[in-house]
Amino acid sequence: MHDQITPTHEAAFLNLTKAAEYLGISPNTLYVWRHRRQGPPSFRMGGRVMYRISALDEWVIAQEQADSRSNAALNPLSRKPIKRAMRTS
Image (cartoon, rainbow, N blue to C red; front, top):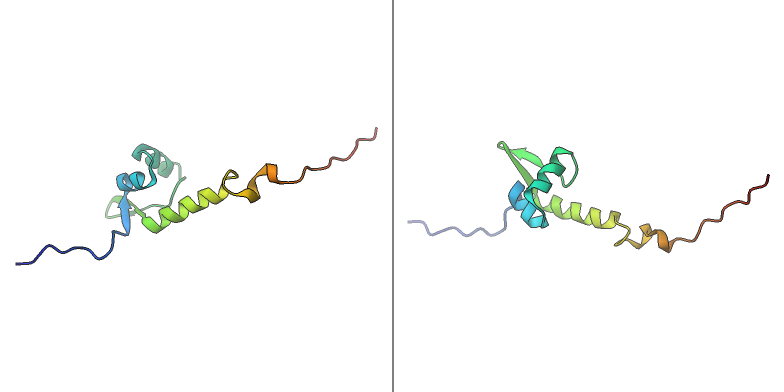
């Protein structure tokens, strides 16, 4: 009667397992991060832990910008040396 409906867009939310796969990490790591209140933002939907895909992307970008290896402004080697005052006794 009805043909199979094909979605016009991808799902906006991922469960913990799919979110871990999306990030390329183990589900256990994501579980531990959630328990420690670290990692990407998550919420409960119908008793299941869910992650919004756009929030995962934003979190990854924030992690990249906070890392001195990928953000030259944070790299301590790109700063001028600090001149220390001479000690006078």
